Image (cartoon, rainbow, N blue to C red; front, side, top):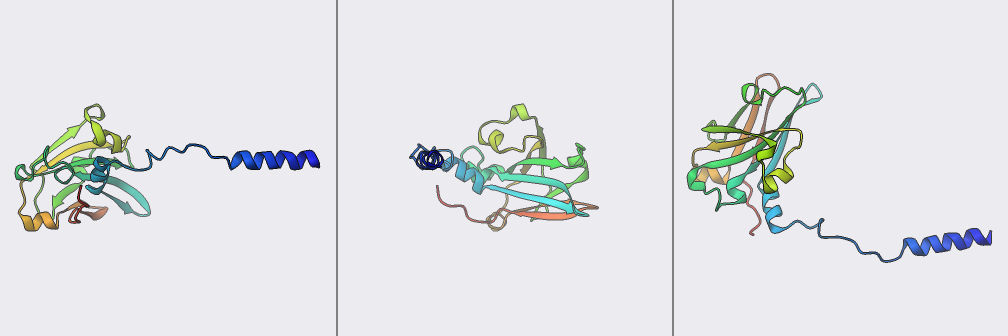
Length: 166
């Protein structure tokens, strides 16, 4: 019994000993925080099954130097379809709240992704760069993208929230 008590006491004190904890990974950098603030996620659920997961990042809000608003609204979109079909561009519609469809949709390969875009992209998804024409200040302040499907319905990603200053 005494051995058992000593063993538990030693185990207790060893378990409570100070050990270094790496908090670096737990606190995002300002660049990561900016990327996260510019990102929205939505999914369409139909008959209790997730049909699609879409994560969109407003690149103009993330990095205005690389993606100036004067050149248009640019989004990185990461898509996962539960049925495994690669027909996102044919089956779904994406429009801005102004009703505008993308001027240009560029499919991307996983090997083409870099930096935070590669780090936060859905690893098993499809990737696209969406380019819309420049929007006026009123539209930019309440910017949103609506994802829709004829059968499954629609959902909206709202990018109108003000980001925390860098």
